[in-house]
Image: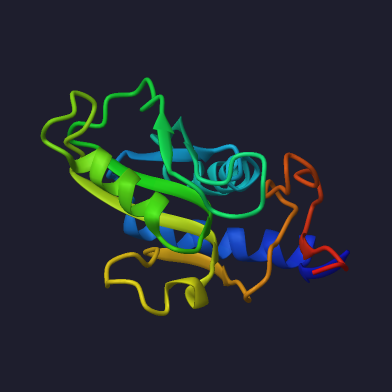
Length: 180
């Protein structure tokens, strides 16, 4: 495994992001909406770092899947919009990786849609561990995350919650398998 972002680098960058978000969301009662399953470790670390800065922070979960059991993007499915009402909330969608931007765009739309009973968020921002800009080279504008810890190279990455067919999620770093 070739390490792209070490455990120490991730820890330092999560703390920096928490400081930035703490300033931006102070007194706004932010809701971290964790995109399962890949963002669960990032969300937990971000919530712990952000809690002292935003003591009224809450966390909820949504499942978004576009990879299934493989390593190539397929059809996007969303399930479980969470248990905490989004109406009037300042929502931070927490993503493991934003590549094409389709998942982030669909979640942003679901949070702000006037047709959804759970929607109506006051504001929605996307916080990504990894921003794979190269995957959006020809995409329409508006698919970029609002906050990102790292820019990701054009490689299939695993670790720190990201998986390959459910394997390699538990590594404390983000890496690329040697076969990539």
